[in-house]
Image 1: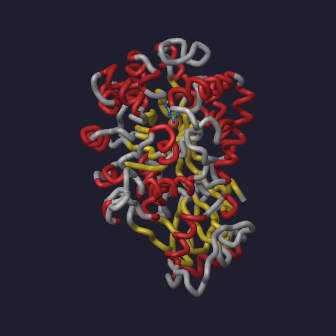
Image 2 (image 1 turned 180 degrees about the vertical axis):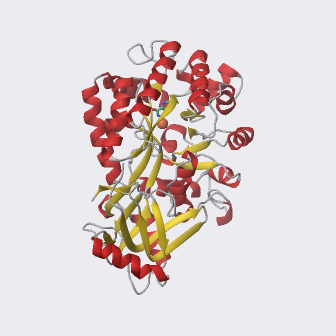
Image 3 (image 1 turned 135 degrees about the vertical axis):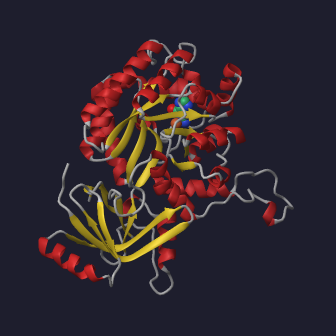
Length: 453
Ligand code: GUN
Ligand code: FE
């Protein structure tokens, strides 16, 4: 799809590397008809004025106003689209009860494609308004409703990877909500992959399919085997839950005598294009295996507080240069905002081990070595997630696609207050990461197309 090329001038913040904030003050960004960043120029460069004048004359110049800043779009590495209607509800029970009592009955309703279309339209509008330009979605077992989600993302311009959920084990999944058997779980996944490829046949599709065994406890060996073979055949993305809770971890170890990660690897489900949600209880050999395969982890700090009563060992994963990004895990997490995700990742990293602190010196309280910085949190929500998915976005770079947010710190109802005399641009960035809300997101672009604003 080609669009009007345009040129934008303003101050941008991004974290092209994990520990590096780069401030692109008053830079000029040229976005071409394919939505790619064609040029980034600093003020004072010889072509700067000529490009600005040409765009001004063509009527395609976007000038950021005082108090407005550009950020890369946010990447949600783990979200359950059908759980949108129960966001903020039923988080006071353990995972296995939550699944059976609330979540499976809700997801079963998506047999009705009209219901799916209605919920998914509302969900995608809300996520875009919250700045989520890319999402890796779990849908439901239903092929048609899962396709409705892919169609909705494409129509509304959100970059997405969508999975028809596979769950066929009659011991763990209720009769009203499961694949009939392993053969149909695999055949329907194949049908879904092929249909998404027809839906978005572009050379660089905006919407892609993902192979999605819900988690090992919900799948038979035959389904896991068949899905692993599909992953090899199509080379497409894979997503699943990995070692999320004590219960889920123990279930897998009792069944296979090895961890989730090792078991997934054995079925061919651990590839460069696999995203493992949660992974709270992975051990060192698991980390080595995930790193060796090039797979990534969706860190879901908020839902981990509820369902895992634990935290993902983020620092150890980052030290190993594993791919990691952030997931909202709606509705295991109650916030659709990845800015909130950054804040939850920050606070979790500072309080990983609580225990009894009375009398301990400061350096022994909390979780020594674990705290991440706000730059790292933002990297996780942008470039980290994009790199995990192997997508050309997440930071501003020539050749990358222009997925971006215009943050208006002077918006009505803004919680961000900048004092020009006291705040450096680095301070402004920190204030945005810690205080930006939906009200501050004035415009959103995905692949150069304005999708909010
Ligand atoms: N494990 C299996 N299914 C789910 C789910 O829907 N949400 C979460 N958080 N964990 C799961
Ligand atoms: Fe989840």
